[in-house]
Length: 265
Image (cartoon, rainbow, N blue to C red):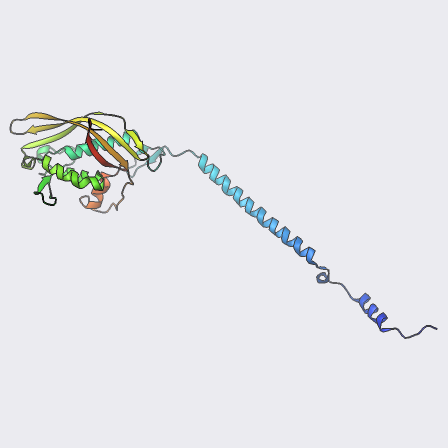
C-alpha cells in the first residue's frame, strides 16, 4: 500500500523544480572570457585605427614639398632650401670666408658708416686695445675686433695677439690704410662632417696717405672653417653690445678654425 505522506526528498525536488532561473545563475566562466576577448579586440581595433590616421598624417607631411621661399620682416622674399644641421652650401662658405677676411684685414682708421656717407664724414676709429700676458699693449681696428668673434675660441686669442703686431699705429692716425682684396676663391673641400677647407688668394693693398702710392702684399691662405649653431639675441639689445656683435659675426653658422699659408699643407 502506497504511503500518502511525501518523503523529504520529494519535497526538496518539488522546491528545486519550482525555482526560477536568473541571468546571474546562467552566467559562467566561459561567458566572462568571451566578453573580455571581445572588449580587448575592440580596444586593439581602435588603437590600430588611430595609428593608421597618424601614419597617414606623417606620410602626407613627409611628401609635402619643403617651402622654396620665405618672407622676411621687411616684406621681401628669399629662396631657401632644406639642408642638414651641419651642412653649409659652397656659396655660404665662400661668402662667410671673404667677409670675415675682409673685416679682419681692412683697416681704414674710420668706423663703418651707412651707405652713401662720405669717407671724410665717418667717425675716427679709436681702435681696441689688446694686451697678452707679458706683452706690450697694442691696438687693432674696431671692425677687426668685432669680426674676430667669427674665430674659434681656441684660435681667437693667439690670432688677436698676432694682429696687434701686424697693425701699424699710423692706421689710427689716419696716415695708413689697409684693404683686403680677394682675387680667387676655390670651391670648399669637405674634410669631415661640418668642416671644410677653402683656398683664398688675394692681396692686402696698403696706402700711405702722405703720397697715395699703394703697395701690395700677397695674401694666399688656406682657411679651415667649421659649422656652428648661429647665436640668437633679443632684437631690443643695443647694436654695440656684445651679444649682437657675436651674433653678427656668426650669423651664417660658421667659424674659422685656422688660417694657414696656402703652401703649408
